[in-house]
Amino acid sequence: MSKSILISGASLAGPALACWLTRAGHRVTVVERAPALREGGQNVDFRGEAHLTMLRRMGILEEIHRRRTHPGPLRIIDGSGAVRATLPASFTGGAVEIGRGDLSRLLHDMSKDRAEYVFSDSIASMAEHDGAVDVTFDSGRQRTFDLVMGADGLHSNVRRLAFGPESGYVRPSGYYVALFDAADGPGGAVLYSEPGRGVMVDDENVLCVFASEPLDYHRRDVATQKRLVAKAFAGMGWETSRFLAGLEGARDFYFDSIGMVQMDGYAKGRVALVGDAGYGATMGGLGAGMSLVASYVLTGELAVHGDHVRAFAAYERVIRPYAKACQRLAGNAGSFFAPRTARGIRLRDGAHRILTSRLFARYLDKLTTKAANSITLKDYPIA
Image 1 (tube, helix red, strand yellow):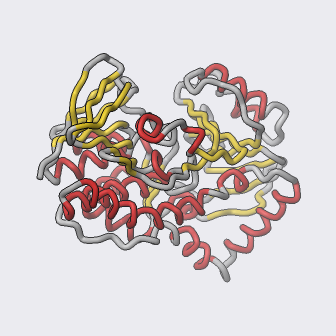
Image 2: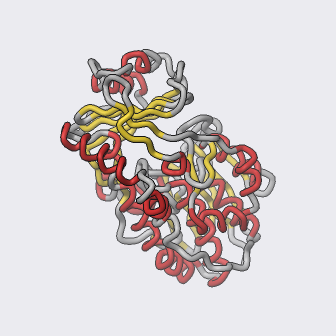
């Protein structure tokens, strides 16, 4: 039975969900606070047969290959630039990698003719009654939907409105991350770390990770965020100052704490959470692949069960173990880029020299795909 469904968020999970839901015959509206799709951002990758199967069923694997990036190995270096360990391209780039902005545009273009997209607006309030959800938007408009899906990321507005304050669900790791465009890349990807801070640079982006006590800043105050990053990396060795010189003028800038969403349930009444909003991590948790897989599963369970109560319960049973596996992988993100001690840096470098040796190369590949493959996709009647 066709339903009217509101999706909050137009990054990756939202447009992916719009693709599947409209294909299944539902009437879909996607609302996004930003004035347009976000361009740029860190590249995202897909790895393992579960990811590739999902992309084939979605019909976008060939196009992703056409637009793919071509990452090289990641060199872990010391302060003199000497290489301490080299990780293969598959470690960071998976089976296929694509720019986040390119993937967002691809998913939007696939769904824009069947779904309604509303930019520069957001959900102000929701009230469920009489078999529907009444929604008031920041713009003042009011509409009614059968279901509402929160696909609006780690700082989900839908989660806050339906489940409560973010502080009850997002667990901080003690690390922060910043990403901005690189004015002059080093020729390939390199990672340099000092205790509690690490900088990874490739020919497109500068990624900064640092350990810190909780910082006081507004999520939309970019100027303050840039000052915090500049302060955290002041005096760092190698060529860090050269790459940080582009921070102040960077147009494509992202900053956030590294955290993880932990919830007892992903649905409440007629509201469900998809991807990072319900079980994501800031980085390292295969977020793009997980979000697209979850969009497929949620739409499939709606198709199988019809009513949302049984569908949401089945969706959670399928996705929860998969989300936990991906989050276990994400738990090491901060300490990989920025071990807190000099000894920790030496141990990381030594461990990865061993893992990338000929003897353990196959084990490393299996290690990086294990979480991605920890789900068997059902053959839902929607593909």
